[in-house]
Length: 267
Image 1 (cartoon, one colour):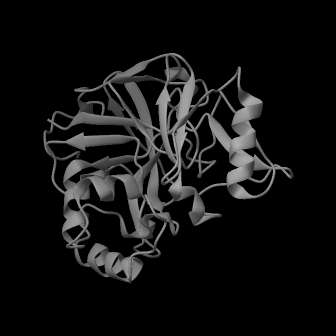
Image 2 (image 1 turned 180 degrees about the vertical axis):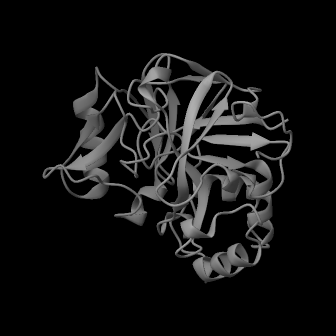
């Protein structure tokens, strides 16, 4: 039976993730604490890894209970900030790092998703990440996991199993993880971020070219071709209806569609 093996949230958009055992669904369909903060310039434009590879140099650790973040740059001491009580010093740290003034914005309803029409968690299988890692001989499973930054990871399924979680382009496909209803929408279109080393920001030579060739070659029979105008796509984008707000996803939750009793594949 497909089951939820990892839950990873990213409290500040584009910074490091936090693996958790469970996550509450917010009214806007996001996971609690996932991308609830974002760094923005004075014009309100989000400062993320798409905009600047420099952000990859920032290492962050979050204490969700105490609402603190620890930040560190290469060869510098770690600094700890309270996300609310020390907001100004935190913004000053980021402003000094980027070389221009920034603010830390917060959205507790939907967070700051990349796809505003599909603002739910992104989903991938462990087998998919393992397969993609095999395309790049010197990249580990964990490195690929960090490059693609999916929220939910499913185990006990074959590679690219998540390509079953969306239907024809423009349609939705309903399924459940535990008690939570999801709407699968499309395979996630990737930006330049996965092509870069997550610690240095250095681009991997021909990463996108290699990925596209292999993705096309290994596209499973259950993938809906109407969703692939190109093959630089990985992980399933989702929405979560407002009716699911307050429900909790937990590690080990089974994945199924209503009325489906299949194990390795959704029908």
